[in-house]
Length: 176
Image (cartoon, rainbow, N blue to C red; front, side, top):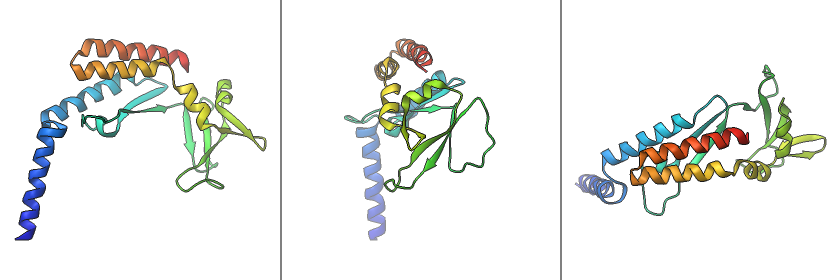
């Protein structure tokens, strides 16, 4: 009997959250579809930008942030140095010694891109990707256009959202 009451309460809470906090199933599907379209518009040969987190899952909650991941397709992160190198790619090796649990340092193994050294620190004659320098280089005007595009999506102005994302893409491409 208690299991049935718990199940009913859980189901009622789920329906309340869907209708009053998160949105209807159709609303969630619409946001997920817009994010998929946006991700596809931003995807190119060198980079993929992905809306993630709760908004990426279609949950539009008051006070929630928007998480955007960028995948740089020309950089490959490896755990092992026994790999076949592709001269067109940059390879970094994960080093976990002298790091906090769950973290690693990324040591540069191979690159053909001179600019990569702008985001590296030199430690004992080895180059490591600097979190601070990398974030600074990646933060630019294209991020502003991404946020603007998502804002236009939220208010339903899909044409303006598309234009903002296209502007972000052109700035981002020039930046890297």
